[in-house]
Image (tube, rainbow, N blue to C red; front, side, top):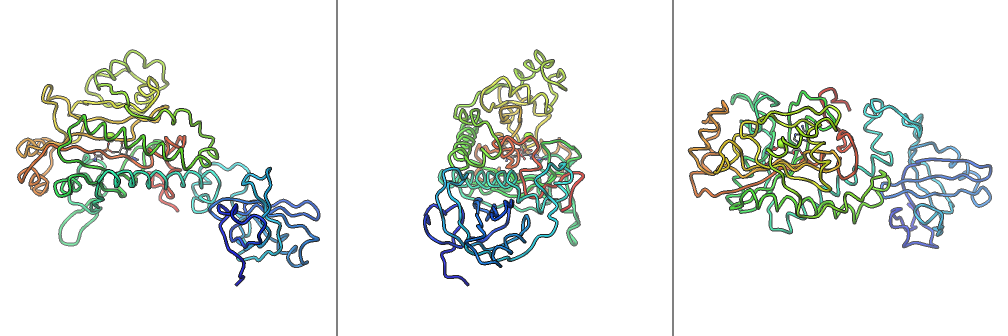
Length: 440
Ligand code: 4AD
Ligand code: MG
């Protein structure tokens, strides 16, 4: 083992003029006679390492010549500031130690089709754009949790194996559960997180959720991650204020901390800089009227009858009217989940909102005030053709100290797709699960 300081490339500025040892993978190599340029990446950043034949031992130069794209190695050299280098520094190489050779790495710098890249997802995550995207994902997750923690929310984990449906029965993944019958992968943690809300006041769950979606769209995965806050004594209006503050805080933190990654992705950050509260609010009724007036402007967009749900083109059209995310509120109860509180003035609509992200991205959050009356909740469960007995515990929450309460769920992949400017959400998670993909 060398006694030289081992550092990460991201921290290289602290070692100017010193000799350091870096460990990583060869991103790119070019040879120009007596010079070899090794672009080394170590996960934190990349740096150009310059091997000059006359400065190194013969075997060291041979090692450098031998290295191929994605071979792993340890490189020792002197850190030199270079204004032209993307990182501001270069390494004048003294030693090269090969750790693991990569032979015929399948992903070359040339263009590959997305099917080929998805088939090699386990390797594709090393590429610059994927790396930037997944870093933004990690930042979004950290920002979301830390913001909620700072607001006094308690993380309250919900189970993944559940007995019941919460978001419709047509997209459940089922499995046999010993002698107890069928169990289903959670579509949401919401029902469980509501029990935590009655214990802690403000809680959130965060975890994978599952929907056997038969849709093959750019916005649907069968396994996605959702963060779901739930607040006691909060009504529908307060729920939207919480959401606009939450989303703005996440976007601003990504702008502050992941500027380099947004640049790698060529994301125009101007629309993101506008993401500050308050967000506009539009009723479902007005949104339908808007669609019917302007549907011809968006490809694939059709007129709507009151009571129909929006498709992706409708959401695109709605978001195009605003310069920041927009809430569409008070949807017809008939097209929403059983647990939503009806509007007391108009019981045919629910006290709910979807938050549609700008620039055509569409829904990233679904939320609502919840029914807090036990009898009404039971009626709704029956009307939805669900077995009341399975929801005994959930109805209990309304029997023992019920309170008005509200919450929402933000899909991490949809949020990351929007913030990073990535059209398809399949690239916003390390291993997307889709109707036609479970490998790798
Ligand atoms: O609107 P949804 O279905 O709402 C719920 O599940 C509520 N229980 C949330 C709550 O109030 N606690 O889903 C919420 C969000 C959507 O807005 C979207 O961002 C994401 O989850 N989502 C999906 N993301 C990827 N693929 C899918 N198939 C998704 N379905 C929903
Ligand atoms: Mg929804």
